[in-house]
Length: 250
Ligand SMILES: Nc1ncnc2c1ncn2[C@@H]1O[C@H](COP(=O)(O)OP(=O)(O)OP(=O)(O)O)[C@@H](O)[C@H]1O
Ligand SMILES: [Mg+2]
Image (cartoon, protein in one colour):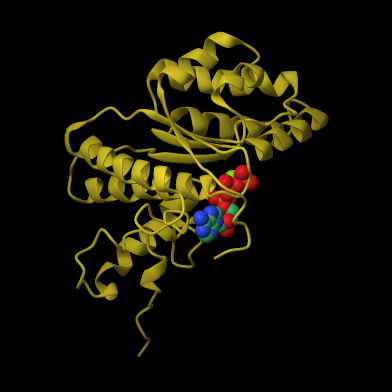
């Protein structure tokens, strides 16, 4: 007789959403739908969440204890997510900012994206309105790197197709994270694509969680124009992260 597969419930983004006494075996199937059987699959893989950030939730992410403003914002945004799935509340964008690196911005951004994916999954399960393409994580620096390679290899290369596929995913997903939007070395060609992406989302009223080491007022430099920077600013709540880098702490 083969043994039923098991999993570590502390890694599941459903852990705080199922009734406290639910035996993990009862939600194994749902865990697999979200995380994949091996932990590298399911809805989180489809949303491109970085592997190290797939277990995070906005209830117990490690930065909540030291980032008071961010912790309050995480609670408020989680409540808004619930209202979104309950009665269609229109979500606003958020701009997670700190001058120092390593303060927990990507951690919270992923925790929130994971929560959105989990709530979307539960809405689907219960037959409530949900999104076919709920979430996408885009690392802006890595995307700039893909662009450089794609340009070097030519417009018909597989690399260019992959670059454009990421653009499409990020354009169409309901909620995305644009991680490290303040990339300083953006090339003019890349800046055009970043502008296209953000402009399309802003025009469609789709929310975005930005993380950045630059102030919102410097965004005009990133997009190459003031108008889009102003529109982003209008639609965003700013969440400040303070202190020095916590990288290396667990
Ligand atoms: N307040 C904290 N307590 C414990 N660990 C933390 C805290 N903040 C961040 N970390 C840890 O530090 C590491 C870096 O966090 P994260 O990637 O979220 O930072 P970041 O603000 O996005 O950094 P960067 O500006 O370089 O992108 C992660 O491993 C995270 O778990
Ligand atoms: Mg980061």
